[in-house]
Picture 1 (cartoon, rainbow, N blue to C red):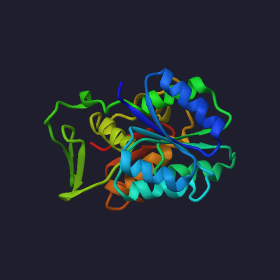
Picture 2 (picture 1 turned 45 degrees about the vertical axis):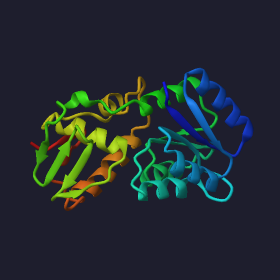
Picture 3 (picture 1 turned 135 degrees about the vertical axis):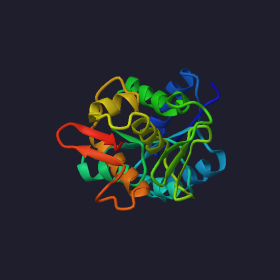
Length: 228
């Protein structure tokens, strides 16, 4: 499989359980018991996915996620948290996490999310080499890049996947449940706020005026669509 998961978690027992189950699924693993080490490993080793605890010694998970996104790194990040506060979950998504799980979690569910997030981006949305344009936006599926007015736009994997999915079905309205299934590739209906926050982040990066979007539109009571 040759895919590497970085586990950043300060509870050694949880690290060992995650490590055992991931290796059984064929993944290589790296481990860090504190935030600073985790950030350094992420930058040095460039893993395929990060399982990132929120409450860590020396540097918390939110700050690690923010730092990696400022670096321009698109690695999928699943945050692990024992917190139940809704604001913490949303904040994790706001700073660039692709998903989160609340402890205690089902190992089967976590492995399913790892598999869904670590997969290679699906290039079947458009033929390789075919540029997709909309207004000032250009998406190149072959190089997995997005530009606006000729300037590169840094998107996370999920932001890119979501944009590409909507762009290739211009005018079609998708419910949040459909987007969770098709873009996140989950076989269950996850937390719909994940879709809403990712839409908001994406608008902030590609829209001239995110408060009055020209590309990604909302159909009240129905879902989201890319303007024709």
